[in-house]
Image (cartoon, rainbow, N blue to C red; front, top):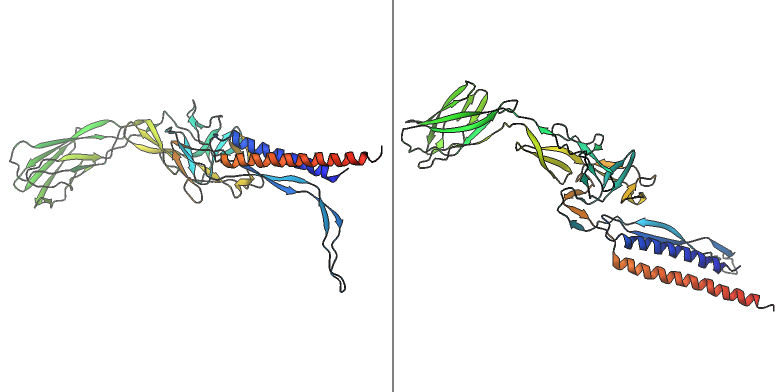
Length: 390
């Protein structure tokens, strides 16, 4: 039988595979973070009809003569180039800008994906649309320890930011140097104990010939006093006093004429608070905002990278799994090393180039037609052979 028949068949099979790959690319043109694939061909074995001859003194060398036996698909490679950004406005939509994959787990199986369309389930876990749980580092008392084992990334809706005892307060503004003697200026500041219970400390400023005298009283029975002096509006005294273990810093007060703006600018205590909202930073840290004004880390999304991403095996649901040729996953913090950063409120679009894919469709179709012509031509030759005997 003619060898060209089998060459044509191999060409049909290979170009059919190219059509399948191209069709899958076009079908996923709007799939989040989809990475297009490309088909590579290579020739198969060649039959040697004449061996090479070495050059002699009286005759030159001859080249080998070979007849090819067709084509086959050498491989289907994945293009991991960056897709365009699509803004969604959803806080749980996360896009990777650069290299890396999200780490997800379904049961005992670990998969990797670049599709960051996540949401929180009923248990507060960050999950993908198919229910795979996003992995990351969990914060302990607002501190995330990198490099440890990863776990399910959870948004603990019932978490409480602990109360903080007030140990210092700051007073700023201006005390008028031209104020007349009279009723003191009273400024109150709310402070907290270690249980979050609030109480109010009063600061009374009384004008004196040398400057201002300050008396602080605490409902618990503690008190403190200090004298403030100024020269040219600039404070020349120490400007601090202690009331029941709370240091009141008044060194920022000034003493210019005609302006009364003295006020307590801040204190470092707070009551206990519950989680109200969260934000995602570029390094993958989930930062919770609490009802008491505190902000602290809840957890951190991790990314994985591979020495050979092209060796990953597609596992469906926009996920990949590692293989012997991809190498083991290296887990790290977004933005560190070669890992990309994260962008909240956006998704990575498919990197399918429709113009290229439609061109590939034409190329594959014409290649298929040409190989089909090989078969029909070979068939005509065989028919001529069979017609020699009638």
